[in-house]
Amino acid sequence: MNFGLNGSENFEPGKQYGFFPAGAFAWVPSSYEFIRENVSWLNFLKLRVSYGVVGNDRISSRRFPYLTLIKEENASNPWGGIGSLTEEQVGANNLMWEKAKKFDVGMDLHLFKDKFTLTLDYFKDTRDGIFQERKQIPDYVGLIQMPYGNIGRMKSWGADGNMEFYQQIGKDAHVILRSNFTLSKNKILNWEDTKKPYTYLENNGYANNVQRGFVAMGLFKDQQDVEMSPTQFGTVRPGDIKYRDINGDGKITDDDKVPLFAYSGVPQLMYGIGAEFRYKSWTLNVLFKGTGRNKFLYGGSDGKSFDGYMPFNQKDKGNIMTIAYNPENRWISAEYSGNQATENPNARFPRLYYGKNENNTKPSTFWMGDARYLRLQELSLAYNLKVPALQRILGINSMNIQLMCENLAVWDSVKIFDPEQATSCGQAYPLPARYSLQLYLNF
Image (cartoon, rainbow, N blue to C red; front, side, top):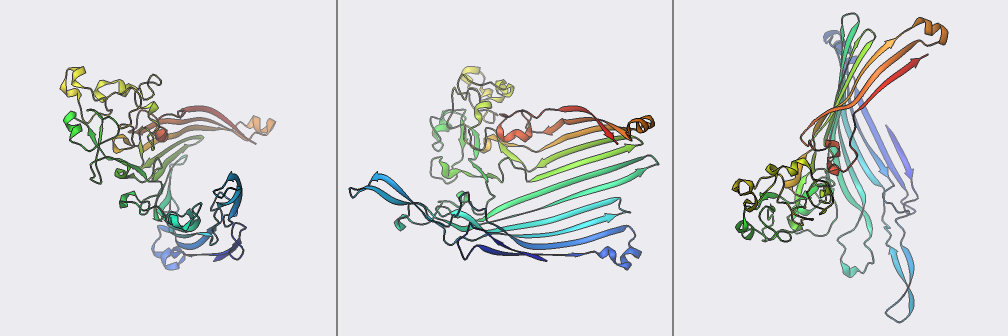
């Protein structure tokens, strides 16, 4: 057990100190004689649980946020004078430490004479007293600026673990398999905001930084489809994206934005798989890494990165990707193609438009993609060379010659640019494959 008594000048006198205790308990069943005699394949088992509270005083970018700051203005005032005093910052005189309550339960396991080892943990973090600007104080209170307070609350939870398996193969060889994973989620429990007309517009109950957007229903089929549908954005024609009227008011507005996926470009699941094979002086290593539950939007989460994806979005500037150049991927009017089949309501791209199309560049399910991937991150081959003459003359015990290859291949559904750069819509320096020949001298 332990505790901390921490103080900070960021809080007003009398509230500067916080008390933060923590404790942990572990039990090792494998240490009992009964287990050792009857479960010979179990070498080690440890069960762990811990709970603690930690504090955070860096709750604002401003120093001394509890102070109310007054500034002088030289502008004329309604009473005919020159100069006035006004509140530049409303102090949070009830400011306290932001606290995180952390819970963890885990297990350490060794089997088959330590050939197999496993570590698993489940964690939960509940954060209270998040420093946030107030939003629901009425105007008649007469505040120049909304004050701040410890009113935010959210939780995060998940699991992580790692595994290793070792197997001797004959006298001169062995193989080691390794893997790890991390799964993490979060949810806002309380975030003060202005009153929303619909619950799906609120932050409470959703993940932090949840991606919001419109629900696309394909492309408009014809002019009748446009006229019979709710009002969209700007001048809409057949071949433009058609959005669902979520609230049923007959027009598409920001009130029709709904949560699309939990995190914008941040995977909920990350994992790695590796292996090592050694035979005498040779060693072969391979490492894969990957992600799961990782959605993104072509064109960016705010709809402002279409310049490298939407043809002619900047008029005469920019390139056109091969997939957009292919007529099979676009909606094309039958008046131009002479074929009704080109008016495909499920095409990957809407109709061509010279310049930015206000309707088609909104964040929506139409542009939603899956950024999951599996990458061959590293592949290396090493040889350990021992030359007795070098040891006698130069004191070099051995030389390790290694060929290292990185970022060799990736398997994903994005295809047109690297899945790790999906949120930038390809407008980032690409991840290169690298090859290096390395020499290590061991003295």
